[in-house]
Length: 204
Ligand SMILES: [Zn+2]
Image (cartoon, rainbow, N blue to C red; front, side, top):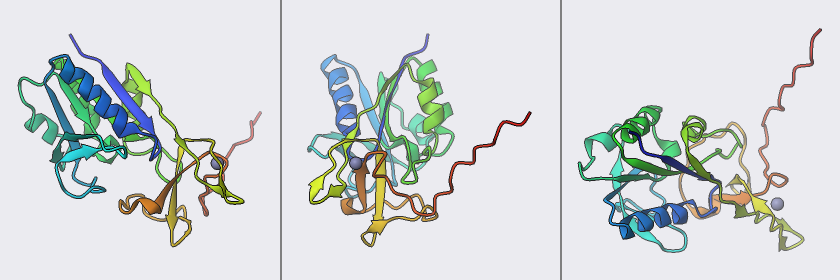
């Protein structure tokens, strides 16, 4: 028997951690044993071993370097494994998740579906394809139009460097101050230097 897999996927500021914390609370209210893991790279909130949402929810978490460390740190009594910022893990995370499910452990993860370029992030495409359930919260576009925020649902993460949209060729991973990233709708997501999609004409 295998357990179910749930993914929470969206841009930054979409409330992914809040939803992950809700899953954890529900399981714990139901008497389930829960373990929470997050990659060492997620240092937005310092190096303390917990996960926090923007609305101040908090839960203890085990900070690990590699995805296999989840199996090494697994408590035999655990019934739910929650994984935060899963897009930062190495590709073996897919096998690790499947091993947990086969061991009859439910897995819920939260992750950024796309990087700042609007391209798939890490193992998210493969992980999402394995999910029994996917929740896709959106943020609110904060692009200013004549001093008023756009306000449309945001599915993209805009990276800002020195007050300007980051270039396509800038490195993907730069975790830091909140002001370096903003939620944007599709219309207001800007990636200078991004190649146009190459659509091949139908050849006969
Ligand atoms: Zn917008």
